[in-house]
Length: 88
Ligand SMILES: [Zn+2]
Ligand SMILES: [Zn+2]
Ligand SMILES: [Zn+2]
Image (cartoon, rainbow, N blue to C red; front, side, top):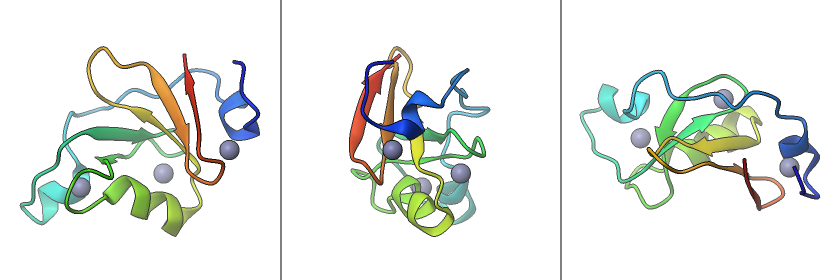
């Protein structure tokens, strides 16, 4: 994968979402716009356009750097600390 980000380069098999819903929004009966799947622990959480921005909060709280889009047909990874994106 052509990227300067070592976090993304280290990803082998990209983790896909177990369920297409934000696991945190479901708990608080909230809604989301798009979904991201954490490549470290497999959590599926909502994007920065969503009111709760759970994926971003998760990355900052846990230090898990890379998420993949969990949207059907989208094949890209994003690293929060390096602000790098790569298609796979
Ligand atoms: Zn990185
Ligand atoms: Zn959420
Ligand atoms: Zn995680």
